[in-house]
Image (cartoon, rainbow, N blue to C red; front, side, top):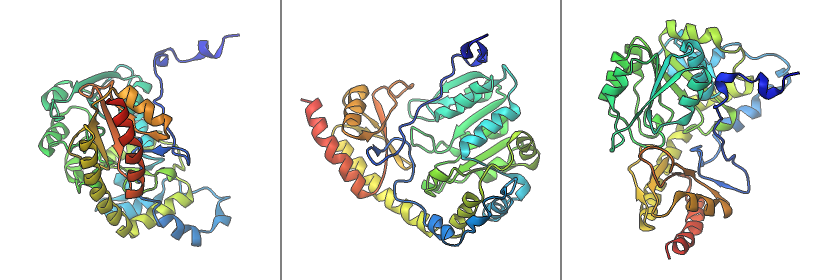
Amino acid sequence: MPSIGELRRRALESLSRPSYTLANTNILSLNNNANLFGVNPAVKEVAESFDFSRLWAYPSEDSDALRLRLASEFDASPTEIIVGNGSDDLLDIVCKSFINPGDVFCQPTPTFRMYKFYAQANFASIDEKVLNDDFSLRTDDIILARAKLVALCQPNNPTANLMDPRDVRRILSESEGITILDEAYSDFCDSDMLADVMESERGIDIRTFSKAYGLAGLRVGFAISRKEIVDELRRVRTPFGLNSFTEAVAIAALDNKGWVTEKIQEMKVERERLSRQMQSLGFQVYPSDCNFLLCGSPVSTDKLVGALEARGVAIRDFGSYPLLENHVRVTVGPRALMDRYLEILRPLMAEVLT
């Protein structure tokens, strides 16, 4: 009998899923860019009135109520919207829908590492274009790649910068294949390129409730595109992508965005304060349009990240990425968490720098 290893798909032998340090009570998790300012009050609001006795029944196959609410929010048709179990689910669905084995997938680098993962898992040939030194896009190189699928993050993770909208528009209009525009962090900087995506013939705008909306644990993502593209995505997605409770919470969160607006403003204040504190400790801190800071470290990132983990703090090491040797990423949270982080970091930096 063959072993499990012998039965494995040969094309995926070199594929390894990125690991994440999960949030728990023992670790200060500043490494995954979740909203650290608390759980959206929509969760409690819905829980107090939700009919849990109906959970024996399947939810809506296509999350129709949420799609209708999103259509109103974004001035679109429900037929132009697809909901998924987080934006990761939708990234996988896009790759499944449009990638044939060997088709070219193109992305800038450094960027969100799961784009490449899902493209590889669906047998794409990967073509990465290193960003310019100022983290701007090599627009011509991306267009000339003639890729079947392109993925862009606006603003970009982990470089934290908003890409020039003119470059993004060129890629949307001039690329021959499908272009994913991931606007996961757009709420933090009031960026919105949905109109440009919808004007293009092959754009897909992907968004999430995991960042500004503080609902990462419930896994809600959605994509907006032309109906003919959404129809293709619906062909391969599994039914019942969201459970009934999660769908109700997402709708409630959209109906009352005051909490989101308030927490974004708090984050911006703490982001500026944390930036100054990190600079005072010798870090090179880049401007940020997101809820995190990219920082050049004055010491080896391996040494820094390992020492912090030993003290119960998790930040993200990007030292192996192009342009980011000795760089780390730190999620911004409320003042109490940032003070706790700095109280651990300060003596550590004094120790490793002496």
